[in-house]
Length: 200
Image 1 (cartoon, one colour):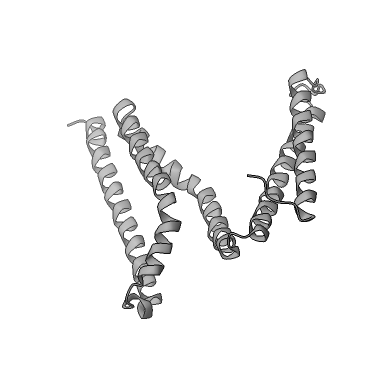
Image 2: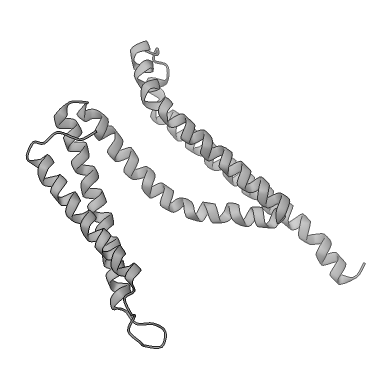
């Protein structure tokens, strides 16, 4: 067997060993997390379930179930499609890229874990709905402001040759839409802050 054939034969074995090591690391990570959680909740694990609490948990959790199921199905379909069309290497690279991209998901999950209990604790009264709506408006104002800054930077910037960018009708239209959206959000915020009702 030539050196080239030996290398080609050793490559699949190395990939299998790497995959096995990754699976062992993943199982160890999940097992360690489960052990820490069980240790932290050891006093409440043996508590008897309360039917009213279970009903409230289902009311809060069941609306999220379709989204979770869709995410799991999409993950499987993406990998299956890549595996059939581009091979195992492409599917593996896609999985690794998703792991790196999950950093943003962790940031979003942190915001959700902090915001949702606060929103649920406010209740369903007019004051609570107004408070939640004001929080949403503040978040959207931040997003619109960031988009406007990026667009203005593009309009005032220079291209690769050092020439100033010429504002096109489309860019001017986008800037006008963002400006109008920001003005509308500020007006709605003032109305709600003054005691106005939340619009359906």
